[in-house]
Image 1: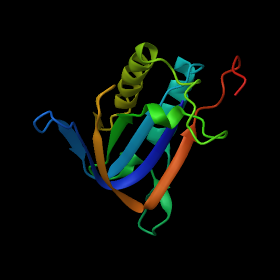
Image 2: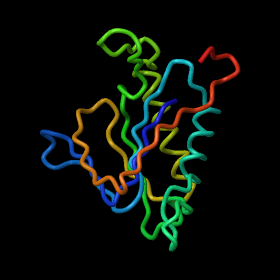
Image 3: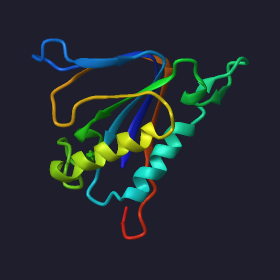
Image 4: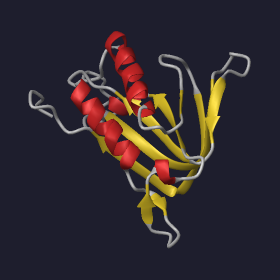
Length: 156
């Protein structure tokens, strides 16, 4: 599983043509989540715990020493993003051979959201498989790429 994490002051997702459907958060994290064929539930749990506890918010001394749970009104916006899992090492076209097929990735996304909500942090989400417009104000800017550790059976 691969995620892109962005610390934000605010963020929103809108669905074009839906008449205003979508959601928004205040201070917190935007998580772009991509799933790959070899991903396991154990990796999903590992990455969820890491995101919930990652200390990337400033404390009173302006040091990255707080997690999203420590931020007043802190919340998370999780956006399913097929392209996060692509490979771009060869050629000029992204490769999606390792991307999890949608019929498997959607239940993984739903489980990821369910697990993230167990940390008592407010979570909003984009819509799996939908065209979305994501708007955010990156705070810092602070952005991280977080990959789950390889599973024992994975050659990653």
